Length: 152
Image (cartoon, rainbow, N blue to C red; front, side, top):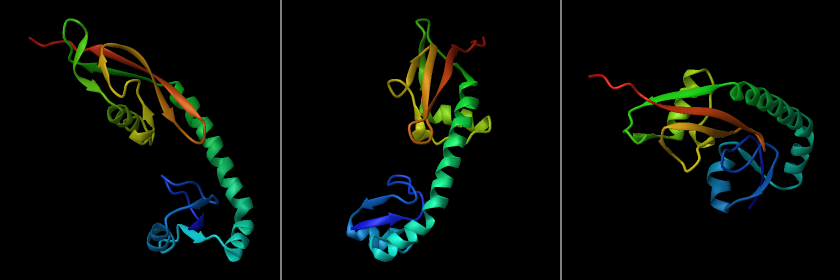
């Protein structure tokens, strides 16, 4: 079934996008929750009427993503972790840990948007972590993993 999205749907698309989805998904979920409207003459008229405001919101998201990218790239995250003599961590640093640390610093980043090389970090060192923002914008954060001092 062809639909027009009324709002951003995380795994599907953005407001104003025309998508093809399963009939049941459209009829039982998207349309009753007012997330989408059927793709027909009436739906196209509604889309044309809202096109200017949709484009304005998309531009605001682009500007916000650029600003967020600049602020994120100024950040450096340091984790103190227990590690063995060879530098191998007892545990690992995951995207959830990075997202939680960013939340503590005032950013609202979903853990699914954080991309760590090889999915987890298991050794001491410096790493670059990518964070997907809006459209093709990505921020790169410096992440440093240090050995925590052992208490006797």
